[in-house]
Length: 201
Image 1 (tube, rainbow, N blue to C red):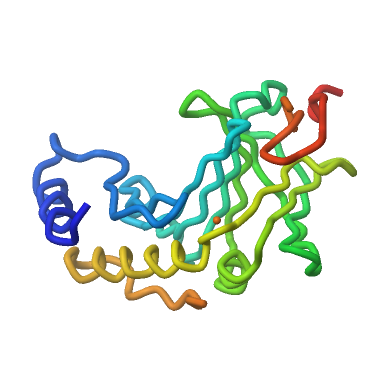
Image 2 (image 1 turned 90 degrees about the vertical axis):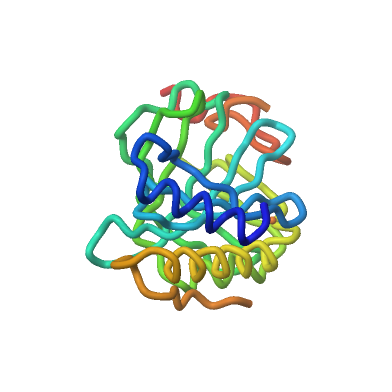
């Protein structure tokens, strides 16, 4: 979508509640899509889908007083992942020190998701710069994804947010995120080698 069309749709949605939609596309970059989510406080995010059905999403969260970022990873095959349950996981970029996080299970858009809230810009910086991301739960690798093109995607996410902030009044200021992509891994995710559901205990 062109910048002019994006701004026009954003303006229509802001003044006409009936025209509002949850996500407005900004543009695509390689395997990544960049969109603006009205339900997160008019916050932009990047997302990519993988062949095994896993979807990853990183974006701004403007719903809280302290504006942060979030990571969401989902797959319809993770059937035993429970909504609103806490899951202690680790997220590793390449061979860097793992990020320890308490993820929350969620069930929406015909998939099961893990949400990690309260992330800082340093997390997005690694997301942009590194080549892969792995997620472990209960001692198992449940996700192993390539991040090809993630640096350009993050740049576009920041450009998206800057445009949204310019168009809408009373919204969060320009983001300061550093700029610089079988079965239930809940059995198995893109490039994962797991075969059973780790949440089925």
